Length: 219
Image (cartoon, rainbow, N blue to C red; front, side):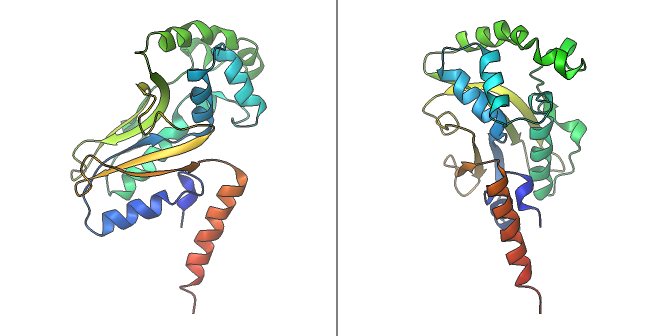
């Protein structure tokens, strides 16, 4: 069992698997997969601080990988999105995922210390993105699985989007993860799963839950 591979302790894979195996037609899955990038953009969207300052706060709180570019590259979100695609029996590979890397090319492969000392180079671009939004909109870094999911492959995108603050994905706070599961039966009203999407305690609880489920099959 591998519930914690996406969404830590949230019952996401279990829910998707049950829906799919029961014959429910899942038409789209989208959400904020990364607790790290959730914290980053939840705070940057509403605080009057430079982007690099929020990045440094995110690092200081221990939310990032040792090299934060692993989070900002979008590859972690892409891997999680691919896991969900395969739960729907789609034949997508990692190369099929369109990923928006938040780090400029010139800074993707330089030494970590050098990158961390130049975080301010990110400020102008992200401030312009923030300022260019419609009133009442916020930034979220999302994974989006869509298309005709009854076919062999779906459309997998990992990207930064601007959405209304009062929307489902726009209203999250802190470092929460949130997922919308759209199905044929539920129509325009998705199933929403939200909560702590990262952290040792919630992940450990999720693993323990899998162990308990497995124990029921042992004679």
